[in-house]
Image (cartoon, rainbow, N blue to C red):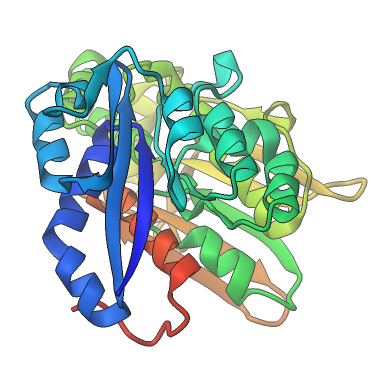
Length: 351
């Protein structure tokens, strides 16, 4: 049995649910893969806890579910201990970086924690889009220089393995275009508007279900979809794209009557992210609400579904769709990425 020591930064929707998932199946991971995941440290916005022998995954999840802080973990919790200090002092194999996206402040604290972890020789797994948008090539170079893995499949389209497929399974192909609906909540809100629900009620319902960010503009103005498109373009297309390269239109300006007319005509609106060949080489990146008919591969997405379409020259057109009624699939991408680092035999699945 091999112990894999983890430090988890961020205990919101994803971090807490990751702890719940591992608490439920850590024994099975040991049986199937010979791995035991050990949470030696965890940090949230109010403090941290560190125990070389391991924190209890379920106890950490329970603290957060009760609106508490990991700083209250008995004996080893400490208020005011920030995430970077924990990463710099902890002895661990992997950093799981799941703090909130914070592009206005340079993707911190996530970016700083990732840099510090790599310099210590720790692998990094993150569903946090911010560091990959701000410093995509730098982080890949840093991982290579320090001989560590960088995995971030959860940064795009929740639990959908869009990056894994694009980067691994499309090797050898020319990807002519990417079309994606990588943001769940905008489709959810637009469907409710098309059904006659008022904007305030639709967004309130989305927030109550935990699918709308505290800063609603991140989702509704298209920033989230644009960030995910940048990561897709850089990872799959080698585009060297930045957030400012994306032509971005959010959904706030859409009239409900427009959405209702599209529904009556057999179409539905989705916030579509596209990377297509540009007129002068390279790729043109855009995010905009788009009416998709039933013939489009993404035209039948439900209100809590996301999808990605890859158009290639030798592998055909590949469409992937995920139904994500809860944050569990997004949180579980961290487990998937961990197993990708440590497990060679990909034919063995956890039942």
